[in-house]
Length: 275
Image (cartoon, rainbow, N blue to C red):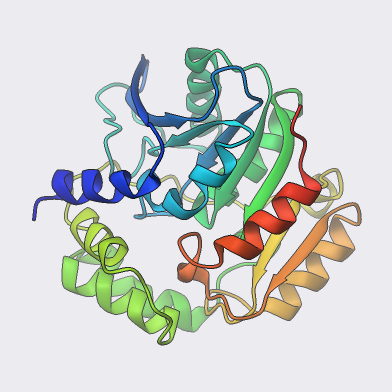
């Protein structure tokens, strides 16, 4: 199966009408999968590194009951976005790209949700552009409140230095620790690893003072190998005392966002705005 076929196959799992949008700016073409009522409050979804936007297939349809959902392929990663223009090299470049995407979608302010690397983009964007973020939702954020565990980085490194389908799937199986990962999610992630893409922008952790100004909804994966869940919870509660922290006891870092949708949706529906 080709990458594009695997992408489309997972997108059909959304079980709602999906509009595929292409937005052009100085960086190239950004691909957005949109669903939900056109007049609904906007939600922007940013995937983790190597995941691509179709992985929101268990969450996007539920959000689409209340929101206009925009799931974006990162301009610096595999997917249907193409960095054919200026290369993003700094966090500020990524923020400019995301602002351009908001503008192209006609969004003034939105609920901004990210997983992993996408959560880091969301956090740093909210710090720099608070006027454009209605509320933050973060799924097991990395390089925001904590750095990555050394064993996790060492295990991921071969797949980063010499990406391959086999290495990607092996890494995901290792991190998800026997949880029932969807075969199509693994298929797409494996194929995505072999797609040409612009190198992702290196993360820079926000300062403690910057984090104190945030009030995100944070989902913590209790079995994550990317960081210590208890330590992450303490850091969020200490640095962002207005945050809401939701423990996903059986989740691992990479079982999100496709698994645990019931728990994620229950907290989201209770905490985040619908108007």
